[in-house]
Length: 160
Image (cartoon, rainbow, N blue to C red; front, side, top):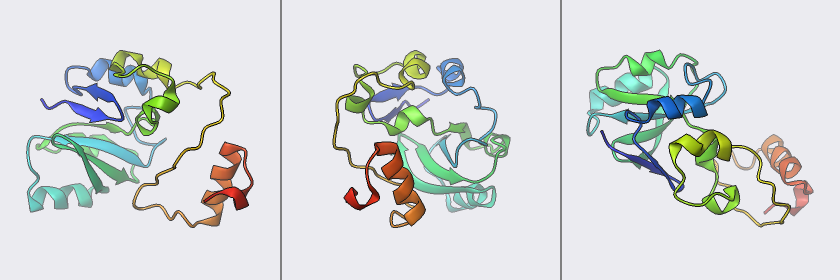
């Protein structure tokens, strides 16, 4: 099937499913994530989009060949995996969110290395980063700004 590339990580979700499962121990459900990746057999029809929406998967963006990033507020991934046009679906791994330069990993990263790369970077070097939020997240939320500031060890007022 089609290979997926996100932030320097390229993988075939069907061929490398065992490695993806190892990198995501909770791949049986989406209880620890509000986002999933869904790879389909080809361009989605209006009916197929509606089926995804009815099952709680709201398409956020087209990520890679026949693969979509979706918000998903439901825990049961089987609801998506059982659809006849879905080839593969799993949670959007945390490691996909991190720019390769911040991971300290050498690109390209192989799927088998995902679990190891997801750990903290030992570097203490300060870096300025841009944080991008999913389209369904309010970047002006005070609670969100406080969480980002705490994670970055900054004052809320210093965030731009």
